[in-house]
Image (cartoon, rainbow, N blue to C red; front, top):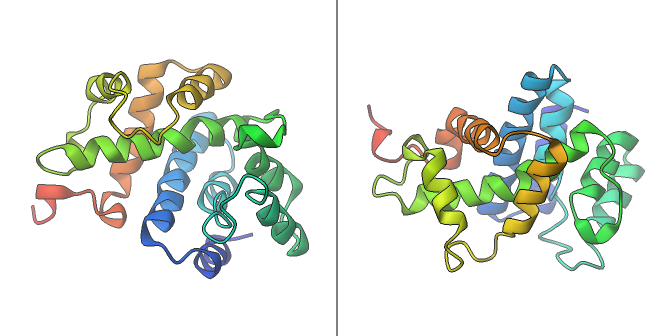
Amino acid sequence: MNKEEAWDLLCEYTKNKNLRKHGLAVEAAMREYARHFGKDEDRWGITGLIHDFDYEKYPSKEEHPYKGNEILRERGWPEDVRKAIMGHADYTGIARDSLMAKTLYAVDELTGFIIAVALVRPTKSIYDVEVPSVKKKFGQKAFAKSVDREMIHKGIEDLGVDEDEHIQRVIKALQNIATELGLEGDYKNE
């Protein structure tokens, strides 16, 4: 299991650039948390990168992430990675009983929400996103309405972290890959 293999798998099943960027964003957040918790950064990062690799091809609740799990099992991917990926979707009923699984669930929806906050900033830069602006947007139902705020809050609670610290950690992770996400905004040429 390595980054190149994971990226190739993601690209094999996912052609949409924004879905690939989502994988990169979740990977970055997972790596940040792996460092924080003293865990295997590559294993956690790769899990984040591929967690939705099957979504574009199999977007229904009947297929995602079940099809992806079958593909990963056939290719010999580790059970803990597959279980974390299965657990990131509430409807699978798979318990998130590892720290990696809880973290994946906690960062998945939040990465998309923070990116949406960055994109409405005048600079369109992740460097201008701060915790209070993210929390303010939580309350605006029309903003990024496809993002499940309940999942974000449940993920934070299940992970047992402070909400502000969690949001800040994910912002930092996304800042670390701003260029790959196209979120450097007006700071691109500085």
